[in-house]
Length: 300
Image 1: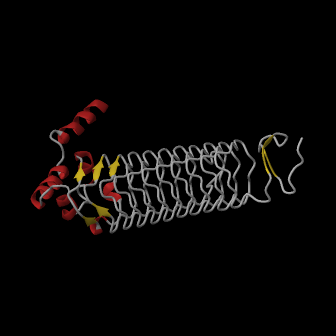
Image 2 (image 1 turned 135 degrees about the vertical axis):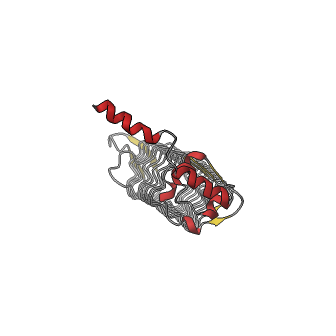
């Protein structure tokens, strides 16, 4: 058996330290070139792997708590079910990487940092990303469906054509972000900061928007459907309106009284039609006055 190099990093399984996952004849993983390496279940908590080349590596179910992975190349890598609470992936290359269902063993917000990272076409669906940092990240066409993003910071992030359907973004900060062509079906956006966000071509279907701040957000060919609490959002009188958007009758019926003429005109209703709609919705349905006596007679 060959003797070990003077400096050898031994990586063991996080759930069984008697099992060696890999050995590297190097002093540090910082700047190391380890493309395509198999590191499943590896115990790498607090590892310093800054600037490392881990392109295409298999880090599935690895323990990467508080790891330093800033500026690392993880393009095409597989981090499915990995634990990354407190990890720093600032400016890392995660294009086409799989980070599905990460941080699920973490209790509370993991606060993983993806600041200025490249997450183009990355898959993060089903992950715990509460309180995580995505400021200025590039996540074009990324899959962020069914994620916990409560309180996450996505200010200035590029989420063009990203899918965030059925994710919880309540209390998240998306000010100045690009959501052009993004799909947000079934999202919880209550209390979300969407000021100056670009919602052009975005699909807001079945979303919750109570107390969300939409001031100065850009609406151009935006699609809104089955959004019963749109009228409870803030900043609706300060939208940046571009090309005509679309809004379904369900949303209009629920919020026409709170929507101003400019927004109604933006979805194709003239001022006269807007007033007529408000009057129509304020009028009790036919027969509503005679149903109460019927219920009273039934109680007798």
